Length: 164
Ligand SMILES: CC(C)(COP(=O)(O)OP(=O)(O)OC[C@H]1O[C@@H](n2cnc3c(N)ncnc32)[C@H](O)[C@@H]1OP(=O)(O)O)[C@@H](O)C(=O)NCCC(=O)NCCS
Image (cartoon, rainbow, N blue to C red; front, top):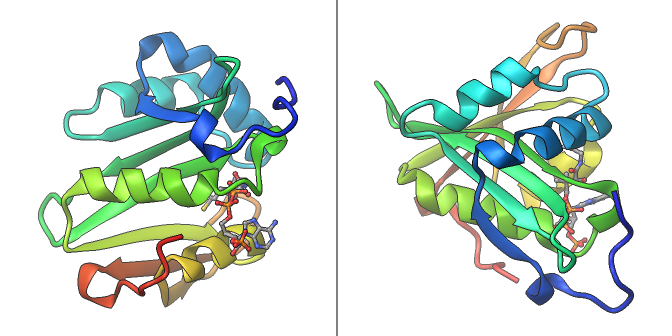
């Protein structure tokens, strides 16, 4: 992954639907940012083609993949789910994660959105708290290595006024 051009800001990046041609780059990114839980090629293929799933990518000024997110719309209940969200380490702390999350949420058309995050993943937990998610419950041993997962939720009515 290439380092971003000096001085480039969020406005120089753009969000697009991800497609089959992004599979290899998304797989590579997943393995960098989720060393313990990366989705397999097959999982990613399913995500890209599963009906109704929202799959978005963040494209850097040089055309490289800077981030990826996927979400599932409500099916038999009122909850949409953020399935995955990640920004390449070279492009983190520029406001991209916040923007990609918001784009994914807005396409889910859900009254409430839930997600699961590793209990130790403070950058992600801070992001979710800063964008209006609240702790719902803890799932001990949720991840393959035994770490607990935290379920967090945001309902449209709860949204804080801090869209920066
Ligand atoms: C979590 C992640 C998506 C954040 O992406 P990002 O583009 O760096 O985040 P942003 O720049 O939009 O930051 C938004 C807010 O999130 C919080 N945040 C992000 N990274 C943080 C960090 N390293 N430490 C503390 N807070 C952090 C802050 O509240 C930040 O707001 P601020 O910059 O005004 O302080 C990114 O760190 C990542 O891809 N991590 C690896 C994959 C992952 O854990 N995904 C989530 C799985 S549930």
